[in-house]
Image (cartoon, rainbow, N blue to C red; front, side):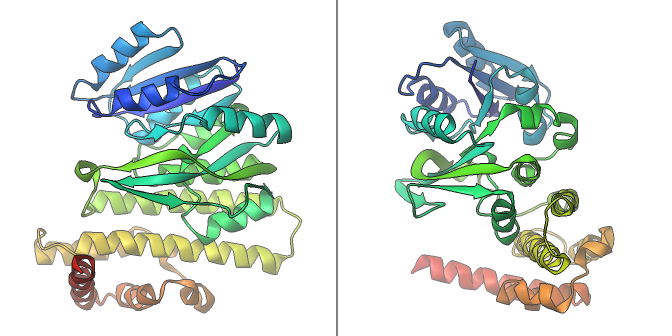
Length: 347
């Protein structure tokens, strides 16, 4: 079997069938494919829908497990898969009908370790195109992939990728060893790049990433921020290991690592902004929690002058307030930024 579609499922009873229909409606290719639905402890009727789909179609399998988070659910799918290539699909999203025939052509022609395709973000009635290359397609090597990865979160999503299955199967315990819904794409993509020699980036939009109003997390819990720091530390180690195998000058490796650290700090600061911008947490408790974020992994927050320069402009100010424990001023600034953001959005 050539392809395994892996679909983690959690409380998407109104969207799951559309997702699966978009897979079953793919333009035909000569190769067989399977669909693996991993019900991650859904509390609505999603689990029953998975069972019904599995009973109706011979190429659909359903696995039920307790709620262990998105990363573990993906890992369950990888373990159960039989395909030579893994296609990751989130259960509230859907595919263009030419996804399979398109990726099959690039795999047969270029034999890449993975394919990354452009996508469309569905926000209500709006369709926003996110192109990852201006060309029809682009072939990238490991160094190019790593440099893109450390510079931006734009290429992290695992649901926009088709992956040579052996890369994940042979390293499954190293990749899927955390229970988290935060940053799980980042772990998988970092590990993928560490093992990949070649990837094809496709300019055509083949995937629809659906933004659901009921799924948007407007604020962040403290546990979310601890988790993302832990994810970033894990990914940093993967980046270091990848750099050690590349034939590059030390100064170039240090530059890449510095860019990753800046991107990671930027990301955590954005999560802290989401934590700070609402008034639903006791003020003294908020100050205490911010201090715990800093104490949780002080080495994470260490940054030289060049790394600080790479932060987003407003985050340079926020970073200095945070590491100097000026938490009162940081909270005030974040709330002002939130008010400004709302005013801009209303115009």
